[in-house]
Image (cartoon, rainbow, N blue to C red; front, side):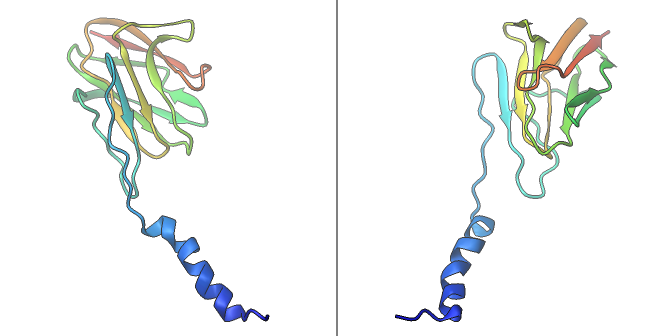
Length: 141
């Protein structure tokens, strides 16, 4: 039995193009506290998780580093985290040794962004729960 090359191409086309044609979007999922999952979809650059505040400051995740490491915002504002990496990051309030109960924690897919809930006055340490060397601090006045 001989298989013609043109038959192989016809059989391979659905496999090659099926992922690009399918439209499955991950919906933000909220769990206990302020945990939120933020997923990037094709062409999406801004995602505002449930309970997110208006951003008063911005932190960028790029090359597994948060920049700037320190940001100031006003009470009641949040901080927008923009992920320029292709891997997901998980900004989490606290330190790798101890996250804050009820503090913010959400996952930001590569190429997406998310904003923390409104923050109260004080100093809020944060880190990436996936890449624990990524750390920073938010000062809320």
